[in-house]
Image (cartoon, protein in one colour):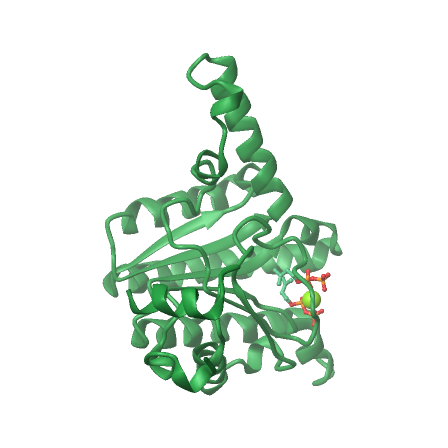
Length: 252
Ligand code: IPE
Ligand code: IPE
Ligand code: MG
């Protein structure tokens, strides 16, 4: 069976999209501007991306905004990113709430200044009951950090006597991740031209469709996202099964 025989392949939509928003620095450099200008332009692209995902009825969007390794960048750049985060939170959280978006942050929160951590938690509490779309912002996040935390939580359960080691299976590991209540990402997008995962969602991307584009994040607009969605609609997802099995599952 080829792609054209698949049921409604063009109308298949990802339920969950995960994006590495890369290329802000190069966008600024191309304009002879400081990197922070690229990050500001990147913040505007975030708004456009959220608008488009809401319009497309996407259930969950996970954005990689700042990795555990990004703390190593020069302190001026980290400081500028933190200021931008604070201002963006102050400006956007109310609007996200009004639009029914549930906001969550994933990553090592204790590494952030108390005023930032406080606003993150406030944004989560305010929007906790919203169900139109879940927006996960990965800040101070690393896939290895996530897996390490899950391992520690499982070890704690064993130490507390509520779990035996032989009971640990994939479902129990998955349940320890902060994204446990969402479908796994169907579509991964990385802008900026690099073809790597850079310690993003290591566990969750096991069967995600990977899409790489050379477009720099500040230029990633609605048309660019629609191109990615169209490409996703043409992908043949099999999850290790034969094409016939996989397509029967899709129909069923
Ligand atoms: C992504 O853009 C934003 C963050 C990592 C915070 P970069 O800052 O990595 O931009 P490039 O890759 O240097 O162009
Ligand atoms: C990945 O981009 C992290 C974010 C976009 C937040 P990086 O620019 O940090 O990744 P590398 O260094 O090119 O792998
Ligand atoms: Mg980069």
